[in-house]
Length: 294
Length: 229
Image 1 (tube, each protein chain N blue to C red):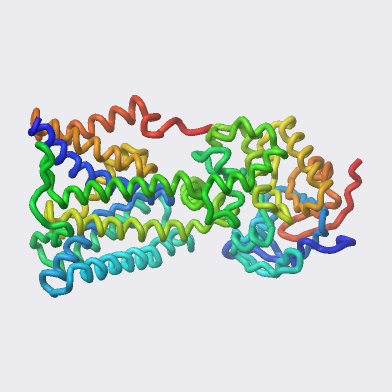
Image 2 (cartoon, rainbow over the protein chains, first blue to last red):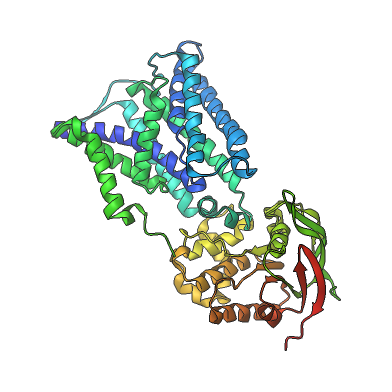
């Protein structure tokens, strides 16, 4: 029983990481049909930036977090203004799927290079927001940072789900991804939604990096890995449902932990992708990927 | 020219795509409650003109709605002034439900409230389109062409337009469905709704229009008065 509960705790923690990045990817993809492949790099900057400001520059922890989150928000705004606004709102550049892929992939490479130049190749971890020994409930042992990670993922998923489901603004955000012209004719500013949600998910990812980094530690190369697991979790949510991405991430994390604990860790990735491919091919409606409407 | 008060004034409106001039200094007035048809062959600037009036493409010239000048290139300002477009090919949100598609027509005035309250605000449009009531929870992309056109009209009516711009409302629809659209338009012309109707088919247009103008090579060519016969 003890082994099962501890695997469950580990699985929920790693699943929360899948889920939060999946949610960030899904909500922005829903608005503008572009995958943000730099979302993991924003988390990396949140973690390493805060650690550096606190441990090297000597800023108070809360000030370090605020400075980093503001910096990440401004970076996201600048990228939107320079690249996305020029490409999408002013009609410049190419708009094919490969070209659009390179917009955020390029941002990821730039952020990685800047992080290496600024912080070097060391492993960083921000101070823990909720420090202290691991929590013990019966045979259930979980680190305090893990509790925060799971909590942040669930709360973020619930807020994004409620925003999209219950507010006019959330429906308008979805409409932007469905038809830019159709949204503009009713007065929806699709560029504003794209910009706001890009900045919001960048800041959320950075905050998640701050909260999560005491567990795993981050280097300048951590971003692409996080973005990739986010893409997988978002895939389980049809790239459009952030609430479902968090739920899917948690399930995937627990399944991986159980498989690793009771069978072998060698099969984790095989299982993950096998399930995803099987669903896409045989039951696409589970992911909301039905046939194209006539 | 309209005899009574003017709802829509278009003065010297031009639209260019690079070096190609799609609309050349068009001047046009539509009176309150009047239905004016813009007819002419495809590719001669009719759609460019109405999309420019709705703020969707850059334009030169002046557009006024009930005397209020509209900024160019601002669809939000056009909607807030009461100028609402039903575009060619509808441009619905296929993965959203019929209910959401209609509700978002009211976005400019309901954006800060809950979706439930917004729907209560606009659900009265179902009185005009009762057949949509049973389709409210169906995704718009799964509806037939005629049903989608009804949703597009309902979405426009949810915006509470004072001037309605209709761009080829029957394009791609079967004749029987097109008749139903024009029956609805005929009902609208009995209200104080001002309508500017772009239509390639003059037979359709003259069923409901009070008068018609013809666009040819980007110019408004000749005014005429419809007989309704």
